[in-house]
Length: 238
Image 1: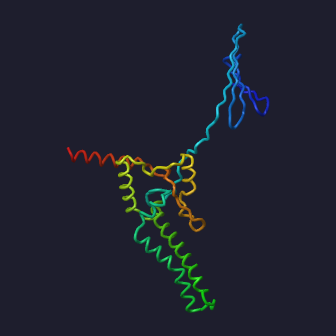
Image 2: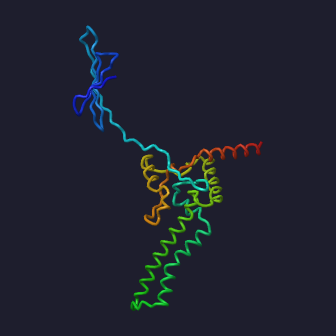
Image 3: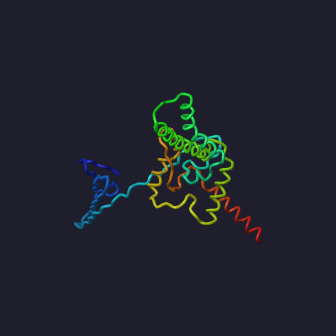
């Protein structure tokens, strides 16, 4: 196959097996126009075709980034509801303690070193400190739970909960990670924006509220476990 480029917009492709056949192609990002002309030896007849094909936008295809951790990965982009739902009691205690620190520290400082801000001034400062404390406490609570999904901390309980949840969905014929009205492309965009986002809370608090299937794990294990349980159930009934 030989290509002769004679300007910026078109190129000619010659077929070495059929010297009388050629195609004229328009170089364009959105459309591709082809004009083909074939002439038989000794025959003046010819055929011409003009076609236009619109190229659909490509969907990103790639492997989900996975970080090597000390414990097995459960989900590198867990949904907000899963992170909160899988939280341990210790996470709530740690979050509440962190939330109370800012207003408690400000109150203590006011007792030992009064600010003399006047009537109502300290109350406003306490409300602001309370908001900062609650926001920080929630982020700390959320991050502790998310770290177990990432496999950064011990997560035996969460792995068991995850397996039970996913196997139940397999048996019920439901999507593992929920249904989404977004296109696969937009689901991928959302996943790449929030993957491992809990590691960046100190700069930008970011959560995943999108159902998608890009979570960095091989979901075959859920179907295999469901099949084993169904086989065991059938054996018990027999």
